[in-house]
Image 1: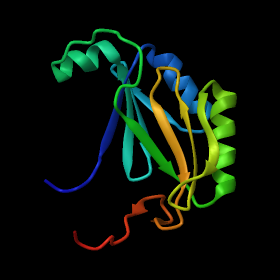
Image 2: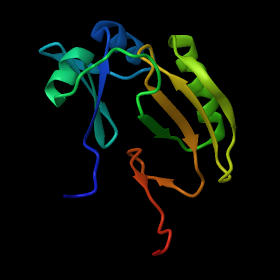
Image 3: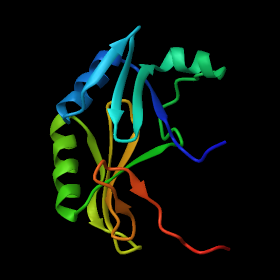
Image 4: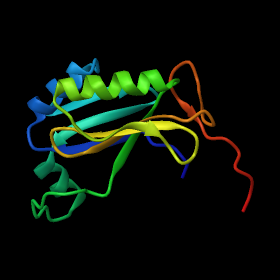
Length: 144
């Protein structure tokens, strides 16, 4: 299996509401069969009914609120971009759960949740270079 993320599917309560949220952030989605696909750099973000996603995965969705165990990261090229994106997300209806600040690793990041509680980190990590297309290059950390 190649080490690559191709799609990130978010199970959402209201596909239309979620699509509008991401479009307010400037992301363009295409809807096919009640599913929205958004090209996000080298991968795609998919917005799909939480109920349908749970059924497709074969898990019970107990409807409990709280952290779902997933944090999505969006790396940018500067601290200023972090501030701008977190502010834009807040203006679009996100809940900022951690305002942008200096990180323990020498970077800068903040967190927000979208309308369905999915956590997003917006970060600038000077140790991770970004290609012109936004794809990230993980540095060589050495073998352990």
